[in-house]
Image (cartoon, rainbow, N blue to C red; front, side, top):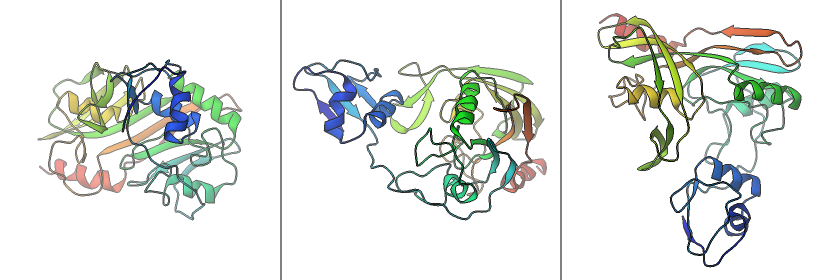
Length: 297
């Protein structure tokens, strides 16, 4: 959707409230995520709109009307009065969205616990961070707002420990490596991310080779930043895309079980005890089944 400003106005977010029939917080979130551009550029919500400005609004969707508890077979790794650590299964979306209002992790968490933080709103209770639907592995969930703020601060300060395992196409010759390349939205496909210098944010990924096979490599990765699709975009950028990735893989899918990317280790400072706790998870069957094919080459 494109809007042309017909007269000078006040702040961008104020201008769009009536035009889009959205809340200020929703509009601000869209501006910050790059879904709203002014004259092709990312600006702040406080940008003063001027006559002739062209506002490009992407992915305007109605809010989810409800999020209901649903009984699900959640793999709870740890739980106390403040936090839940859950091992997310393959194909499970983290929170409800338009067109996907049930069967998400949030639906299951709402059934499992009546105590979830409210900071991220009624459709994302407890959710401090996310992983893709077809990425498996460990997530921390906050059961109260105090814990949420404490955990979110650790994410912001990059003090949490998040280690991923991935199987990538190709044989990586280096034992270790660092990818320092900014990530932003793909100008040709707004649903995808890419390495770009335009309207992008700093992104750093470290990797270490665990095992080499004839046509693939098993690697361990750690993140300094947490950009959308960061590992998938970065590995594709250096020519070693994630095996079975339907978006960035550039190869025929082996099956429909999802990309071979698993959030294996998660560590953080507990919000009440202030002690460091760490958790590890096994690779899921969907990952192992594909991995075994390469071991047998």
